Image (cartoon, rainbow, N blue to C red):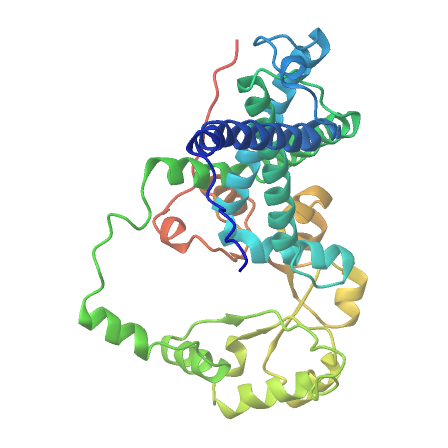
Length: 360
């Protein structure tokens, strides 16, 4: 008969394994973690001995000590830029539209910048956290030169965009300040059933609905009409389609300010009562086309001057006038009408505002 083999290990051997195994696993996992963090931070993937890798705090070179604040600066600037861009999300469409006017190519540039700013914030945050962990573990800092270049590039990009926002989008900083001061949704009461029912019944009005309202209130109608995309079925006949809708609404023709220059001869023939409105063309061209009204950006008009147009008895409509001082300037310049997004404020002005600044 075969003898049974005794596979029971001695108690002393089992105790030694239980005693040493947790220490081995702990040291091994710690070394792997430190090596992984060091590799991400400095691109050096060698596992150093514990005695060599453990050092006192703030033992890194003076160059690394001087550069670490740049990591903090890049993190702070990227967070501020990302926060500002998120808070101005209400203006994304206007931003995309401005880019489209310059490039004639439509794309969601605002979302692309949002993704870019998010990547910059994540990258600078990762480097900052990795550096802090290495210092906490007592390891020497050695940021790879590529990371240093990218960190400086992050600071440069954030600085450029923040300067652009400060110069050309200065009023949007008010949105950021309000977002820090007020909680937008936390303090709002839930909608009542009546408000919910009202919201369900609301819809985007059609052009015919707008014309019906304008006819009822005897208001002038002015709107931009953009050319449809290349494959749109109404690309070549969109003007005639819009004119047909306007005529079917039975609105008085003199209430329509017609801006679009495309197929203008057809519009004049089909709807002679429309008030034809031009752009900032020369007076000779306006006279030749029998146009007595122009719709102009206020910046271009005040830059080029309006004396010649007023002398030629050409009515002027300015867009977009939202500030009281600009409205007062248009008033004093005898501008006939303005287009505004701030009707709640401008309707309260019954006389021009004059401001005098004391200078010594």
